[in-house]
Length: 214
Image 1 (cartoon, helix red, strand yellow):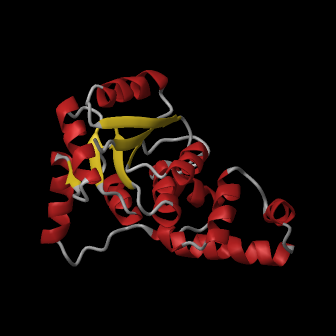
Image 2 (tube, rainbow, N blue to C red):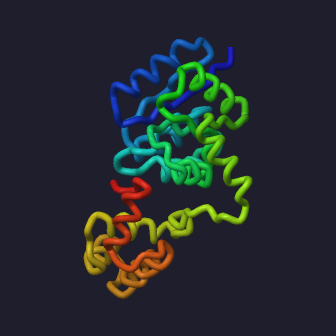
């Protein structure tokens, strides 16, 4: 029998254990790992290469959208299902851009979660009713750009972004990253320009809007 190997990532223990119990009740599913933060999720996914990763967006240390990007790059055989309480349109679009194979809200029925896991394991995408409606609206509004400037940041700029929202100055960023103050300031300016914000407060507001705060 070929099991569907699944990793479950959620920082809320009770909810994570409930998802694990639901999946484990399916004789075709084998939960190979549980994680509670983004960095641990990436590390275990790379090490274990599960067929499906069920990932929440709001994870500590590394948010679920960044986890998605890392898994696409470093664990390409793993297909990711986003399971979240956040129904805002931008979360669906961010997840799809980042490489999600599926998107469900946490109020979905258990049978739909099982169906989604099976679909992803078979190479099919699975978007719940809400996510499907969001994506359908994009189809009928083809001239409306998907607002995801964060994806255009380089790896170094994302490091700088993270340090900015932690409250570090350009000089402190330079010291943390072992680069010159001028280089740190240049990276900071590039981040502000790409996110279309004017100052540190704007970066923090952007991070809060898209739940990129650590």
